[in-house]
Amino acid sequence: MATTDDYGQGVSIASLTDTPNAETLAKNIANAIVQRSVMRFSSASARAAALTSPVEGMQTWLQDTNLMYHYDGSSWVPQSTETMGWTALSSLGSYGGGVTASTPAPRMRKINDHGTEVWEYEGAVNISAMNAATTTLLFTFNAGHRPATGRGFVTYNSSHYGTRLTIATDGKLSASVPTEAGNGVNKVWLDGARITNPAAT
Image (tube, rainbow, N blue to C red; front, top):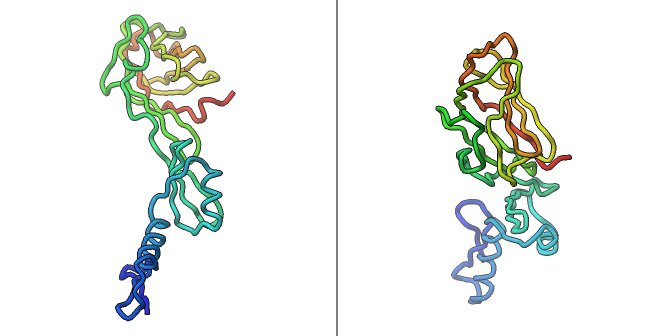
């Protein structure tokens, strides 16, 4: 009589007293292990055709979206994944006049957070001249790293006053500080700037 594995995963193991059948033995083990591994499918429709009765805890990878999903008992839930690792800004566009990379280095990354694309920024830039209450161009992103609509954030700067950062649809990352900050601001941080669903219009 067949038994199950020692780890409580329901993998059927043939007993020495069972009628020899190599095909059944192999199939029982393969089917049990496959459904507990990461299954790959070309699309959600291909997955639905193959897994008509998914079991809670199953994991799949869809090749058309390049995302991992798990089945929570009622639906397939996408997992968070990094689609572009932390990348130096210098590889993604060009700095404005008088603007250079500072410490920590300014970087950007892209992740898929449970089905929603998110762009994140960190680090800081040095600015040779930044007048208060005016807009200063810090950086211009190349195509592919520009949001579909303009976005704005508030971050930190060397004057300890807030900095308003904006990223326009043409890729221009600009900054402005209030009059109270004076004209001596020489460093702006990007930490905390985050775009959720950059393709939204």
